Amino acid sequence: MNTAGAAPLPKRRVAILISGRGSNMMSLVGAAQHDGYPAEIVAVISNRPEAAGLAWARAQGVPTFAINHKNYASRSAFEAELQAVLDKVGAELVALAGFMRLLTEDFTRHWARRMINIHPSLLPAFKGLSTHERVLAAGVRITGCTVHFVVAEMDGGPIIGQAAVPVRADDSPDTLAARVLAAEHRLYPQALAAVASGNVTATDNGIQVRQMHPVSSETEETLMICPPAQQS
Image (cartoon, rainbow, N blue to C red; front, side, top):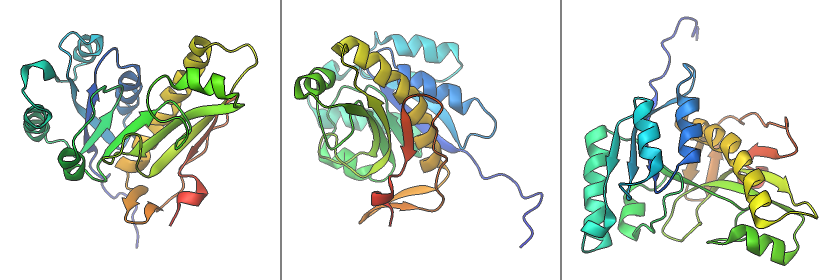
């Protein structure tokens, strides 16, 4: 079939959830400003009205919403309002970027295979908080970050991509966190692009890859979208 001159596929509509400064949100918004990127950011939503990332997103022309979780009697009530906003903006995908709220099983089930998150370790190792302190205490030599589909289990779900970051002998939690965060800013836009384009999808058996995404090795960090062991 001759596809010359075919119209480009529509961009997937993405809402980003944050709780603070949202530096990963900034990397996604920046990537989405390029014409060839397969996603558009239709909203930035925070559970904290004072989150600094909201002002930054507004300055970029992205619609923002503050839904203060303290105003709701239960997680389900908060999530009902969150879902109403997601419906209002026509979100097709949700990207968590420093969103510090555990989501209920009902909400994650509703967004199954359409919601992704980034975590500052090479999952399944070092789930949860205080990641860099625990990495240094364990004496591991390689850490990094992971983008994964969200499921009810915290920091669980099929892995979309990872970036490996060497641990240096003189690292502190702060210096290690800064280098891992820089890798996150490179990995997350690539992983979202892979999902938004349909090149990577979640299945009952893990991850299905239609087309391998390019691997970047421009820095000491190694980025890989969809580890081969996850392909089906």
